[in-house]
Amino acid sequence: MNQAKEASISSFKAGMYLLENLTSGMYNDPLSIYREYIQNAVDSIDIGLADGTIDSALVDINLDPFKKRIVIKDNGIGIPAKMAEKVLSSIGSSNKQERNLRGFRGIGRLGGIAFSDRATFKTKYFGDNIESVQEWDCLKLRHIISNRQYSLTFQELFDNVTTFSQHNGVRSNHSYFEVILEGVSSFRNQVFDIERIQNYISQVAPVPFDYELFSNGKIIDQHLLGCLSFHNTYDISLNGNKIYKPYRDVIHTSMKNGGGADTIKEVKFFEINDRNGQPLAKGWYGLREQMLGSIRKGEKYSGIRVRVGNILIGDAHLLDKCFREERFNSYVIGEIYVDSIHLIPNSRRDDFIDNDAKNAFYNAIEKTVGLPLSKEIRLQSRIMSVSKQSDNHSADKPITKINGDTGNDVRDIKKAVVTADFKTLQAINIINEIRSKCRNCDRLSDISGIFDF
Image (cartoon, rainbow, N blue to C red; front, side, top):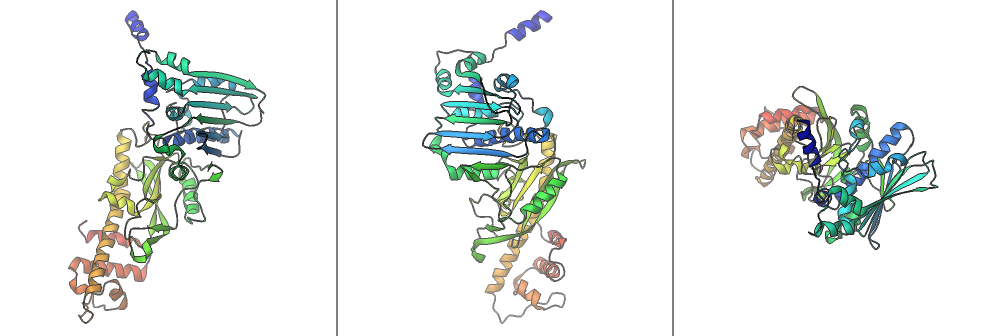
C-alpha cells in the first residue's frame, strides 16, 4: 500500500503549460494587472499598519508609454530577506489565509508577465538593509512555451526564465515592494491608456471618496467604520495624481427633462443576511431626487457594486439579475461590502465561488434591495406616464375628486385623473399624503400593494 502511494507521488508532473494558464490564461484583460498589484500592495500595507512598522498607506503607479514601462511601488511591510527567495518563487501558494487578507492564491504577481518582456520584483523588509530582487525573462518564457520542441517541467521552466539576487546597503528604516514591467504591450495599447486606467482604478481599487464632490461620502465612511469588521482606504496615485472613487452628488441621466441630471439627496443603509440572520454584507445606495431615467450609459458610478476588502468584484452589472428588470440596476448608485469569510471571490474576481453563502447572498440582495427599488422605479415611471397624459388633457375638463379633496397638491401631482384607472387614483392619494406630511416617510412601500409589480 505504501509502495503504491510512493509510486503515485513520484509520478506526478507539472508541465510548463501550467504557467501559461496562470499568466495569459488567467489575466486576459490587461487592466486586471493593476487590480492584482494594488491588491497585493494594500495587503502588505495592512500588515505593516497592524504591526506598527508603518503609519501611512501609499501606492504609486507610474506609466511611461514611450519607454513601455510600468512601475508600481508601495510602502508596505515588504518581505524579509531570509524569506524572499522562497516567497517570490512560490506560485499558487500563499500564507495570507490566516490573516484574512484579500489575496490568498499566490498568483497575483504573475499578471504583468503576460504583457511584458521583462518583469522585476524588488522588496525590502522594515529593519533589513538587504534588497531582494527577482527577475523574469518574459520573452524567453513565451518563446519556450510557443516552441513545441521544448518539453519542460514547471520547475525547469521556472529555473530557465527567472533569476534571484540580493543587494546590501539599502536603508533599514523603510520598507517597500516594487514591481517593474518593461517592454509592456497589449491589444490597442490599453495598458497605457491613462484615462481608461484612472477610470478603472477609481472603480476597482480601495480608494477614498472625494468628499467635496460627493458629500455623502463622509457619512458612508463613518457608517462603514462602525459596522464592518474591517474597512480601510488607501492613497493611490497614477503619475502623481491621487485617485478617488467616481461618486458625485449630481449624476447624469438619460432623461432630457431637467437637463439630463439628478441629485443624490441622501443615502440609505442596509444589511444583507443569510436565512439564519447571520450577516453577510453591509451596503448603501443613493436616494435620488427624481427616480426618472437610468444613469447615462458610460458613467463610472452606475449600478450597485459589490466589494470585498473594498476591492470590486465583477463589474457594474454583477447584480443586474437581482432586479425585476436588469436595466433597473443602472438607475441607482451604491455599494455592498462583503463581511463574511464564507463569500470567497473566484480567481478572476468576477464573482464568488459556488457555495450556500453565495446563493443566500444573491437571494437576500434581490429581496432587500432589488425588488423594492424595482417597484419604486416602475411606480415613478407610471406616475410620469400619467403626468404626460394629464398634460395632454383638455384644461376645461373637470377634475375628479379624491376623497372629496380637490386641493392644489392633488392637482399638481396629477391634473387629469379622469383618464387614470382606479389603482392610479389610489397611488395619487398616498403620494399626496406622503408629500404633505412626511417627505422622507417610508410609506412609499405601501404603494407596492396597489400595483401588480
